[in-house]
Image (cartoon, rainbow, N blue to C red; front, top):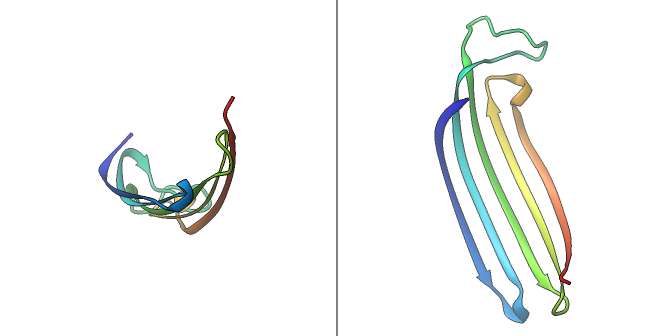
Length: 104
């Protein structure tokens, strides 16, 4: 269980040929109420402090209709999570998305 603040923003832009560009980003700070921060060996930190995370992300996607019933989405995502718990601390994670949708 945690408390914290979150800020996100999203921009959707309609492009020619019914193509849509979607940009989204955000930041979240999480202060855990009972989870103690751990080191990479799984031991509680000597300070005994509670886990604190700061997460930021950015996503970009392009929605492309191929026909009236078929569409595809191409996307890229970037996430960074800074934490005093080493199991949840990573400087950057990149992801790629390809989605093919068919309506029946």
